Length: 425
Ligand code: GLV
Ligand code: MN
Ligand code: MN
Image 1 (cartoon, rainbow, N blue to C red):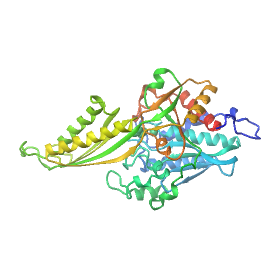
Image 2: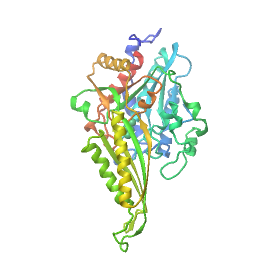
Image 3: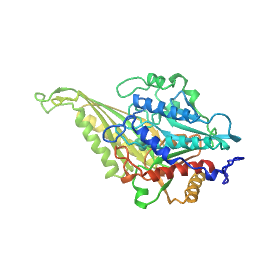
Image 4: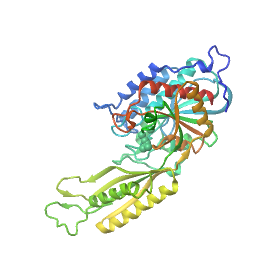
């Protein structure tokens, strides 16, 4: 990694390159309107109509800036500078995040990293900067898994983890991903063409809002991420027997919702009381037929476990599995549990962390090294390349909610640090 800047034979030196902060903020505002709700929240679930609109919107902005946007077979949106601006032919530097959101989530989670990556590319392009590496901006498809329950879909395809993906994925209501993917320009039969080999990238950089309270509490502008949490996501299906709420005796009921309620209690307890893993959440549940005077016949729920230690995560997973089996026997229902996501905790690359820290210092911004408690595409891309992440403060530390915010100053600072880090690499 070189510490000198790589802009050669140009009137402007790399250090003088600056992000257009007003344009960055304006683009974030415009993007937030796509899927935007009255309460300020954004619903742009992966492969939904709103997601499709956002992807087209960003691709259009890239084209207007003289950049080229393409979609790979996995549905990832890649933005490049036309022609060859490289001083050498080392593997590319990839910069990005995701455009999809959770249901009624925030305007910045993912979107910020994609728009900032576009700004970095456009800034380099407008300056006619020659870089040692090609710089590519990316928006990974379906990072959240809010509609199609395969979070990290795009980055898993990109990293070649095809065996870990279902062959015919469906959304929560059974609609095929194959069709949704084709609508955005992807192709489920050609996923292999979208995979990148280990060593084919020099680095992946992701700029993101912290989504937690640390930077704000410490009064720092920039977070240098040192690790990203591990995560196990489990899908639980519990089937019982429907019946009339007024006439079916309490004795002998086979009520899957009662079993689900007990399981949710266990999930909370294994993080809160037993401290088997850092956090544990049930955030989604579907009850059938969901009628106030009918005993349900089926419940589907999702369990999300996080920890930085894979052994602790595995222990927590076994606890959930064991508890479900016991509760199902007790409640006389059938239960099936499947682990749909297993992402190992990862360390970011030390040299990239140093480059981020040096960039922040050179630009006069305070910084803190911290772990990420949220999941990010970076942890999947880490399979094939050194990764680094830059955080900016989240106001009140909140995310995945409509009130997710970061100050405009910090948003611009983060993008400046991203640009400088790219140049340093
Ligand atoms: C990704 O947003 C996560 O759930 O951490
Ligand atoms: Mn998120
Ligand atoms: Mn995110």
